[in-house]
Length: 363
Image 1 (cartoon, one colour):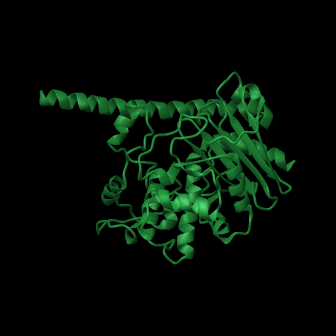
Image 2 (cartoon, one colour; image 1 turned 135 degrees about the vertical axis):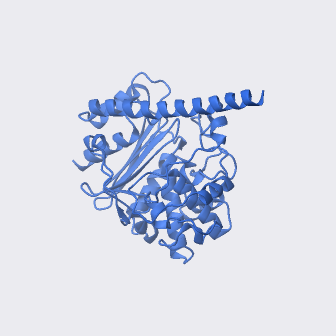
């Protein structure tokens, strides 16, 4: 009986992994196919195609141009909706806030870019650990994430994959990982930003949720940006548990007014954000399909991607039911923000829409 139960558990585990692998591969194939069709579309055409026949879609588009901010809300078939400020998950745009907190720690003398992780966390001796710089630039050698047992339950209950993965789980995984001294290529790592969240907690003696919520409310005065409490007008928000370690990689929600204000901070000469935009590594991570869409990943600062050819600094984000883009040109003061309540793999993603809009704003 015991062996039979073990076989059943193993079968379930393998099935989950296979389904996840097929899903990821399917998204990539679907994405490449769509990219081949849409490279010639204008922003308006791409937006209308994405919204075609979808009653539930709500995409908010914000711009800053010539010093003026504005936004428009679009629904089914590209119809303009009332100018309501909807609450969206902003996914990995959260990483830019985490990076700003790290930079603040650097300015306060609490953190150093070239310190290794074990200088802040209680980890075993004898392993090799990456630096803060490597975590910020996704060049640590760490994977995007590591499988943990809560992911099985999350899969079957259709919860956020990262829900219930605690600080201790991340520490335990770190304790078993040892990277060599090689220079690693760019590999996007949610795990790396979960580690940065732990480091911030260690340095300041507060949970990440408290740190980032105070930062956005007290320092940035963004009244509608916070770690998700699953409340908002659109719905289908990710489930999180208090203290989840991956919150620092993708746990914030926001609205268009706050995102445009946040973009304005990026355009200002504020030393905190200016430091985050300075290149820390050359990554040359633009794939062929990205280049077809005009998406360039030439260098990286503190999480911010730098497009050298077009002078754009940008980041995007995606969860199961939302995706977004924020890009800006510090020379011209031009900004494009796309907030969408559609999955990242649905038709044309916010990143492609955002790049198209940025290109058109230049004209």
